[in-house]
Length: 338
Image (cartoon, rainbow, N blue to C red):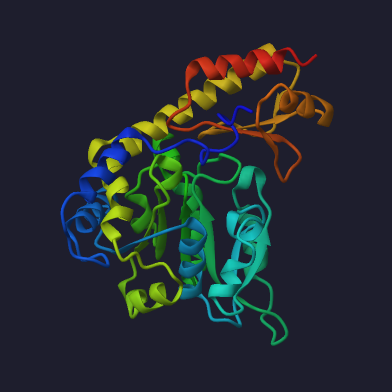
């Protein structure tokens, strides 16, 4: 089975990430995140965001998202998110687990972008004592369907919730792809995001994600919270080292740009060489194709791993490691399904 396009998690570590791990592994260093490697990786992120922030490196995006949301809402409150967001569909109730009951309110919107009118309608709902009122907003950049919010789109979503005193979280598992599509990282703190998950795994690192807290008041006893959640690495430099390798080399950005380019190549081939249509605009590194179940099964039988997504379309994901030759092979296979 070919897993080239099954997910951006199927690719291994980028060479610069491996080199970063090897460098971090040399000799002895302080433990639990007080080492130079971890500090340098955090500084690299601060520089890109042009913001002072508390940063910790954790083992998974699910933990990072869930712990972040637990900081922004009480157990009797809820978080607003797109109904296809990872926190709603792929984290097995982790936000509620870490948040001791925090709820999720799903909102609609094309291609994973929250519809501002749907948000406005939800904010207009009366607060009653029999359901969890919203206390925070969770945004995904790039979205689960490969859309990239513009600064203006984010502002129209963030401003009304901040006006109510709500917190804002951003899931940046594919933030590198959003940046490659033209998104300015410096907009994140400017817009009022309180907590960001800065993605490493899908960008070519190992399993590392950075939890970035712009609101430093949220960092009170943060290390205690992370320790209780099993998210404190004793040899933290080995967690931060691959991220540092990606950031210092510039491969975090270039890998995202390559993945986006390969996705556009695939999308163009599907659109011009096959009878199938794209389900969503291709703005980042994911391609969603409308095809009959029989065609999808035939493609799997030919050895291509690809999965039906929540909206019924078939998802193909490109990564830093995707080769143009593999893209062309896949296009030929899809074109030959007739």
